[in-house]
Image 1: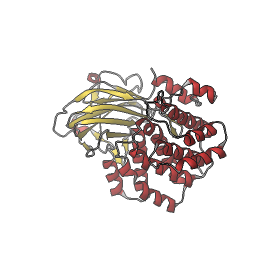
Image 2: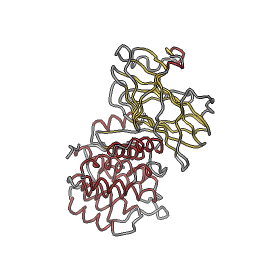
Image 3: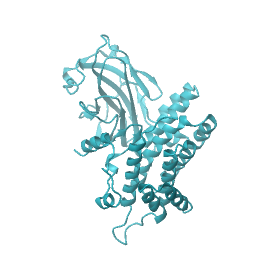
Image 4: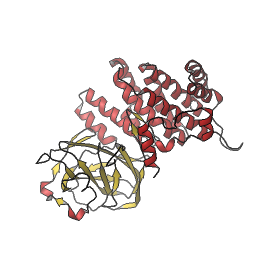
Length: 393
C-alpha cells in the first residue's frame, strides 16, 4: 500500500467538510435548507475523534434521499474514514459513487468542494486494488466520458482524464490513449518555436520581440503520449526559457486552459497578456487554470517554460465550461488567423498539496466553527498556508 500524508490530509479534509457545512447553513428561514443533521453530526464527531460514531451517523444519512446534499456529504465522510483506515476498495467504491452522483446535484459550491478531492483519491487508490476491482471501477466510472462533464470543476476533470490516460496505458491500447486525450481536451500537437535566453527565471518575462525565434521550417515538434508532452533536450544541455506553441479550434464560449508543469511558466492566448504559473523562489502550484471566453474558430496558445537542463515535460488541457463538442488541437503552422479573445483571461487559484488536492479559495472556515472545533490552524499544512497566502494576493 502506498504511504499517505495522513495528518496533513486529515486536517484539510475535515476543514473542507466543515466549510461545506457552514456554507450551506441558512442565515434566515427563507434560505435554502441545510443538510440534515445526521451528515453534519457525523463530521462533528469525526472532527472530535469519534470515528465509530461518525461512521454510524454517515450510514444513517446515506439511507435518505440518494441525490441530496446530505447523502453526498455522508458518502464523502464514509469514503474518508475508509481511506484513512486503509480500506482501499471501500474508499474507492464510495469516491467513485460520489463522482457519479455529483453532476446531478444543484448545489454548485458543494460540487466544487467535494469533486476534486474525490477524483484525486480515485486516481491515487486505483493502483492499490486488484485487477478485478480495477476493471469494475473502469466500467462503472467511465473516466474519459465523465471528464467531459462541465458540471464537474476543472481539477476533478483533469484527474479523471489522467485516470483515463492511465487505463489506456495499462491496457497497452495506443489508439485508446490517443482517443482519450483528444476527447478530454489534452494538447497533442505542440512545437518549440524559439528561446528567450539561457536564464530560466530572469529571461522568462522578456519581451517577445527579443526572442531567438526559429524559422517555421525548423520548429521542433514535442513528442506526445496521451496527455504527456515532452520537449527534446537542448543542444548544449543547459537550461533556458523555451517558447512552445500550439493552436486549438473551438466553438464560441467559456473555457478553462489548464497547464501542468513542475517549474515556472507563462501562458499567453492569442498573443495576449502573460499569465504566471509556478513560483520563482518557493512553493507554487504545479497546475494552474486560466478562465477565458473564446470566439469560434482557431486560437493560438503560447507557453514559456523555465526549463532546467534535461527534458521538459508538460501537459495542457482546454476544457469547455459548457456542454458541446470537444476542442480540436491543430498544427500552429496551418493557415488561419486567430479570432481573438472575448475578454481578458482570469487566473483561477489552485493548490496541489502532496498527493491530495485542496482548493484554497473554497476552504473558508468561519471563526465560530474554529472555536467550536479547535485546530492549530484552518490550514494544518505549512505548504497549504503558503499557497493560501499567495492565492489571496
